[in-house]
Amino acid sequence: MSRINISPPLLNTSSPWATTQDDLAKLYSLSSTGAVATRTSLLYDGFPDDPSIHQHAFISPSSSINSYGYSPHPLKYYLSSIESIIKSSGQPQKKPFIISVTGPPSVVSICVNEISEWAHKESISAYAEINLSCPNIPNDPPPAYSESDLKDHLSELQALQHKSEVPIVPIGFKTPPYTYQHQFDKLVSALEAYPGVVSFITATNTLGNSLLLADGGLDPIIASASGTGVGGLAGGSIHPLSLGNVFTIRKMLDKSSKREIQDIVIIGAGGVSDVHGYQRMRKVGAVAVGLATALGSRGVEIFDEILKLGE
Image (tube, rainbow, N blue to C red; front, side):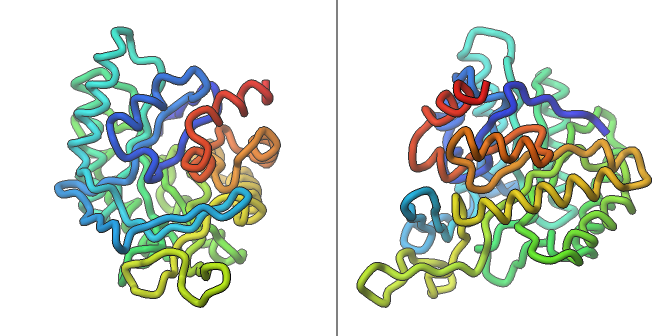
């Protein structure tokens, strides 16, 4: 498995604020980001994004709730966008792109293969992040809560590594917030069954089944595909839970008897909105720290602010 390098150790995570080529170009131009992550894409078609049911709202002071699915742009849009961004900079590539994808195991394997062949052909530094944790897709629960689903993905990816004619890009899993020990056990058990497949884990995505009603009323603050207004909670409200996930996963990886599992690194995400959150994530074991809600609410300037104070 390949190692990843994110320097400085600060980046955006896959989110609605990394949807367009312009979004990615702004993030790439910053000296304070060590990598740029794309919004999660599907292989062939864009997700049928509908603003009437896919929404977000910011919750003072630092949280958010959203009912989004995946990107309205397919994988090929992000590959061509990244090429254009690097070319238009007029300089050699200065930081890697983390290309977020999702789908059934066999489709994810095709995505990773396409990313790898493209990266090899174009000499582009890229990582593939498999989003196994979106809570907002009706009738499609996050695969990272199921050991068998995790193993299905790992099996397909391991087979790809063995048969690919080009080097496979580093692969990561984006995990949901786990709330009890057995969930962590299932994750590590799956990883240990297929050592050497995963290079990094991004922990955590949003916390599903969250609901907020508008002040003074009984109506949900956002709409959703389910018609309930239930969505994923993010930002400061889940920061302690995300910290606990990073801490627990790091400790469990370190205790593994398999060196390939010990070598997996963690990108810490969830509620980081200032230098203190950044420092907490680093202290509990994150090799790099990702932002989403803070990016959406405060703009790209947040990265400069955190890095300057964190140096």
